[in-house]
Image 1 (cartoon, helix red, strand yellow):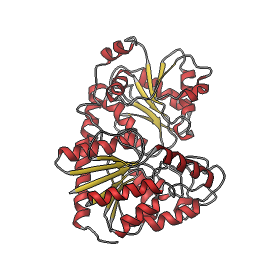
Image 2 (cartoon, one colour):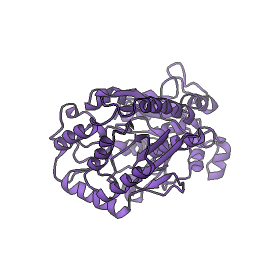
Image 3 (tube, helix red, strand yellow):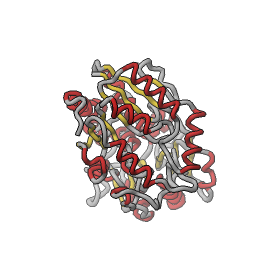
Image 4 (cartoon, one colour):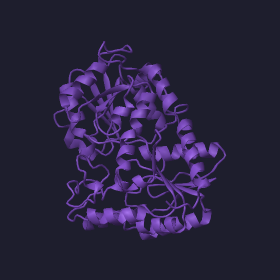
Length: 419
């Protein structure tokens, strides 16, 4: 079974780490596995191929902003991808995030559809079935054709023009032809939304994201980690991941306000901070910023030493960072958005009304106040080894990959079948 995964990045960011986990597990299981990605750092793996080049991506991003059309540029990079596919001849293609200015969608899907290559397609957001946006928030135009987009200024951003109706029409034509596909999402929420869209003609299933819980994301010893990074044993520490804070969807303003509201109660540590966002910190005295890092061991140590991890996203699928924090024994507070509530069930954290700052603050305080496994009769919050064990059981790489292998085999048995 020869599997090719395609994604924007490899092992950088949530979806990219999922790709890397699947790839490594497939190789460990003796499968013939490959990855092709468009941008970021090279993986130093002979079975991982970077086909994109930075100048092409910058040009594609510029053209996307100017014209309002994303996914229709970067022909040269996509032709290199096609040449790679011709060379390895995969039995099945596993698609992931196709936005990110690194692909020409018509060229890729003409090849996939013409060659009747079966596809597993994991939706890490909603881009595949909307005219352009990654998350549609309250808008439901994606169900019937888009146009007059209320989110045209969100990623992938258009500076002036709205071609969302045109892109929706062409996406529908491209994505619903060719051989059989199976659509996968990590959350029940997104599976239900996908079934309402034009890809609902295909089988849509939920496979929870998995993470490396044996060798990377596990409790590292809170006292030792705090001593290593210079924090006191009794300090209250709140952790957040600040990558992408320019995007309103990430909810940066809620964690900044949290810092102000809990000024004398806790310190806020933000990993992945971009200095361009320093203006956001005006009026705060208890925020510690750390640049982005690809050091997974460092991340695991910070997850471990935090008292609570916060995810203030206004729209989210099934966040990998949430799993990573919980796998290190740290409970999570987030909003009731997308798949977040599914991640925080059974005492793994607290989800509150979207955008409710007071409820967000109080949930964080509730978790901070508890050093035990309960915060009182109202809410049970797991932490430490008990929480880590739950994630190891439910969200291991092995479990995720086994479920993917099952649907790979199903598709290959039906290879070339058109529905």
